[in-house]
Length: 331
Ligand code: ADP
Ligand code: MG
Image 1 (cartoon, rainbow, N blue to C red):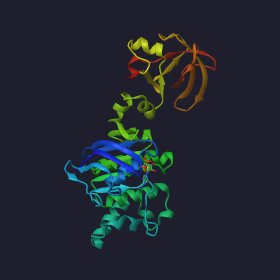
Image 2: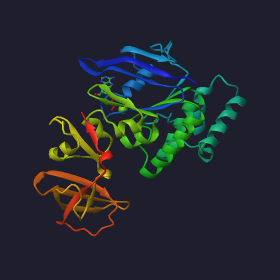
Image 3: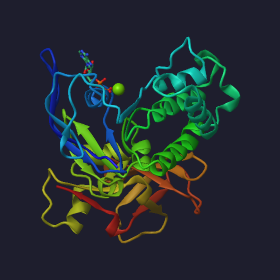
Image 4: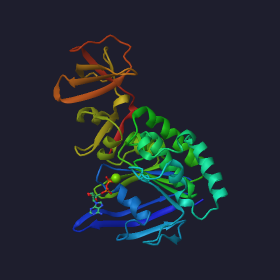
């Protein structure tokens, strides 16, 4: 298996610096996701790894020693483009076998038939890309990349064109397939849920850099700063006085936060006696989302995601309930 390391990577387009001093490693067999907002340079990193972008600083290494040569297509690397980039004049079968020109007809057929079966595309094999749904096009594009037998798979927002039901199904399927084939994968996305559920590790881009790199659990539970905490999921910031009861030395710049699903309400006074007024209730199926506002400080709102087993109504007085161990302290 092959791992990949990005060392002190930096790139500018003209006067505009896009990324600086980006370093991270993907161990063999791992799925690493680079998470960042649109325009933060995610596709640019993948393009550089695939040698489609050549004027950058730093090094890209395969297995810690074999340097990726700029301008040279590396057959160990498979690239799945955001828009799938299928050849429109070729049918499904021809798209998949495009890269296999060195094989004999018999070998080619054997391999393509196997992939058609594996990717559930047998009945679509003669169709052209405009005759396929988004999910089918995506499967063709992945099958085409896999046909090369790459060791590293680069995936650029692979689920962005799929509707939510298909997205969930495809996520599980793709993760299983990457693991079964023993590939190392770099996935880029702006979708934090996708990153959390797909990855062994996540790197978050902010201000041209990777600001934190680690397992999804580590990033979610121990975010390095407020930006990361908010980017990975909705949060409530505890009022300063309440935060002080847990962290007596807390400064105004530091924050004590709670995830929204860890913040609950009670109609009876809890050990947090500050009264809140219930302002909004939205039924969301699995849970209800509530907005409460501090009776003594109308700037202090909190969002609650709770399975409501108590009868509450708008304008009721309610009290906060949460576990101390769920508080995340942001330095
Ligand atoms: P992301 O994939 O995170 O949305 P990109 O990597 O596509 O972001 O782009 C990052 C920034 O670099 C954007 O501002 C984009 O306009 C710019 N950019 C990307 N490629 C080029 C290029 N070849 N020439 C000039 N600017 C580019
Ligand atoms: Mg992109």
